[in-house]
Length: 367
Image 1 (cartoon, rainbow, N blue to C red):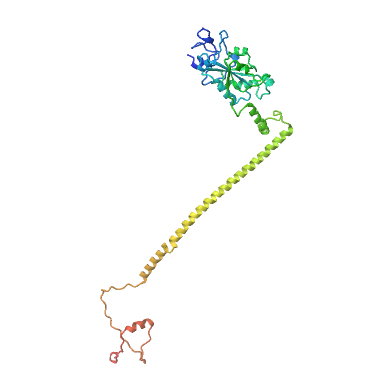
Image 2: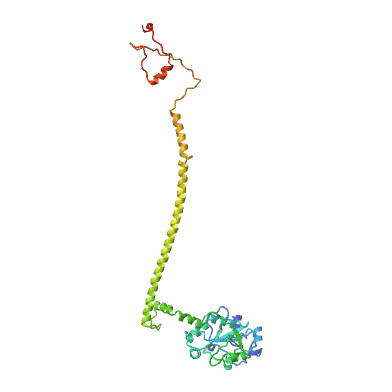
């Protein structure tokens, strides 16, 4: 199976055939000791003592102009970046990303100083050297890691690892009795500057931890760490436990306050909703009442209609004008004995007797 182009790009084993400078050829198909791909990495970067290099080939450095133009695929520009890389963070990763992208074809070698050197020249570290090696190994931009890297780069070290350029930020780094440990690298024209990431550094992270020391101690005590592991005295341990209880009480009180506020808010919303519904129902009730009992309501029309029907039911029927009338003979009147007056009559009979024609019964008729 043919090796992918990216594998040839990062090939660390070369043969000398005189086809180009530094023993490089355009297509060197010899597989390296450890196969890697710069795309879709699945394994950490190897250590330098795990990579086989053929030192029998002459090695000539490329110039900056040649590196910028681009080198053959099997002759990448070997860039070296070193550091402590304690508490590996995004600022470290961004610096290595810049070093990896300095030239079109770059092979990035990263040196990590040991605990002994770091403690002597800089100070105590949070992570030990093995942890720092492992952190740098798993950065995607790194092709090779040098353990126990030197504090000051010597010509022998540069030749051993066949380094073309050294990448670091351009701020003078004073240490080991020197104003700038990269001064001789800059004078040799091998220095490639990178930019620092503002706002984050190992010192800043440690400062945050020291500033919030009580918070982190209490958190770790809560998680099960002992006071001895955290180097905390007995009195401070009790103090932190007391503070933790006080904070829990405060949190509960705060939760109760928030829940009470939510309850009051819900009651207010419900009351407003009930008031609105009551107003709607009251308007509806008043409208229905007026429609039924108002001046022009349905009840008035119903009473009028009922009254008319009652009057119609109790009033006598009038005879039609065209019906024939029957002549009725007037009833004969008579006198009361021993009286010339007519007998008393009721008020109803009086009205009828006024119009009635009365006459006296003759003696002949009485006979």
